Length: 282
Image (cartoon, rainbow, N blue to C red; front, side):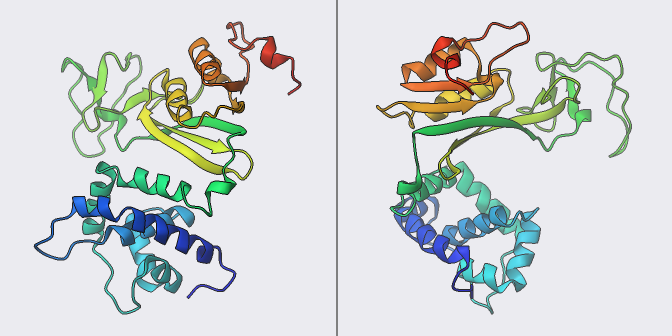
């Protein structure tokens, strides 16, 4: 059991109510006959614990649930019940993600009467980062099938020196959707995806998220898509770094009634921010 003042005691009823609102969606994913299926409510509770406590893998998460009484209490698993097999857990997790249940669960939590008053649309921040793909750089091969043959062995060495590789001419044979990208000049390029998040600044709560291909316009495109349902008739201020200082993004925000407080480009590139924003200090 959790102590009376433990944060999970406040979170557990909010999660329970959100899961109850998704009962109809869960019913669509599972057949009424056959063997007993993996309860999606318990799986989502377990994934929350993985995020809260930064558990590195699902295998370690299930190990924690095996002997951690706090984890079992939050997942609603009796102390003598066997823990799920990690392969079954992973397959069912993929089913929920592909069924868009995870996103629906996120929205149900935001709509909870305990959470909604904490969300402010007055001041919002948006940002993005690169997510490393589970693909080796050795798998980044020419699309036309040319190039040197793959090195022998699982960890065979490969010399890329002098070879020009771009997303237009190459693709990963392990993960074709991964894109070659780097966070900044001088850093090594990696096979990546792009992760994006919108946060409200009053309490630091997440209001929107997205995962996209790591293209050159990923931040701007995802930022516009995530802000569209959050814009309000009253003026909303949006903070962002200079990667969002583009004509298209700034114009889209102003069309939504959002004031874009983005960092300006100062390296010779033309900034989309004008006196409407720069007249204010900071």
